[in-house]
Amino acid sequence: MDKPPAVGRRERKKAATRQAIADAALQLFLERGYDRVSIRDIAEAADVSTTTLFKHFPGKEALVFDRDEDREAELIAAVRRRPAGQGIVDALREHVLTSWIPVATHPLRAEFTGLVDSTPALREYGERMWTRHTAALSAAIADDAGVSHDDIACRALARFVLEIPALAQGRQDPRTAVEEVFDLLAHGWRPLG
Image (cartoon, rainbow, N blue to C red; front, top):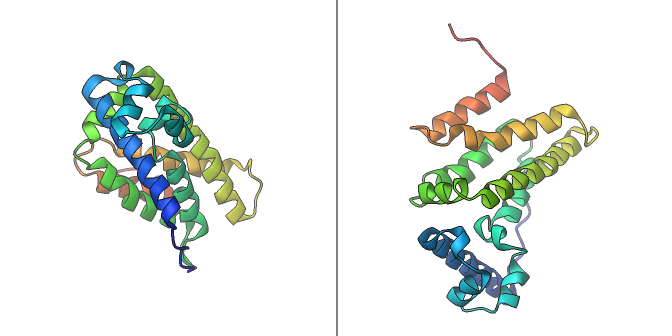
């Protein structure tokens, strides 16, 4: 596997600024509520100009889902960069377990979910975000399988995988819930008893 290129000073500074903005926004949203926080409030808390804020984020909703682009790239990489001999479903299982379980067990998860669920603009943005991920993940799966991007099986697999975190959310043991759903995808439905 290729070693990722070294990240330069400029890229590190940009990433640090982006993270500072996202952190300030989330803290303010959780303290005051999404609708009571302005872009100017966030820029001041992060010690940047509003122009700088908009260079990193296209709008207020994107501040809440600050890793949206990274998550999509990581999903596609899970398919395209998986080890030889590893199936797509197993690669996506591994990706969900390593990327989503830490998020699901994060101490601020309940507050974050409450913020999103109680704010219609954020709920709608989150739903649109997942739809975009479905298209990109489906295309990566289709490319790997050598079929058309509109292949229904590839689209269904992408959609099912992206629904797993929502299905496992709130379960006593999220890891076991994720494993159960991936077992269903890998082996098909088996009636109980």
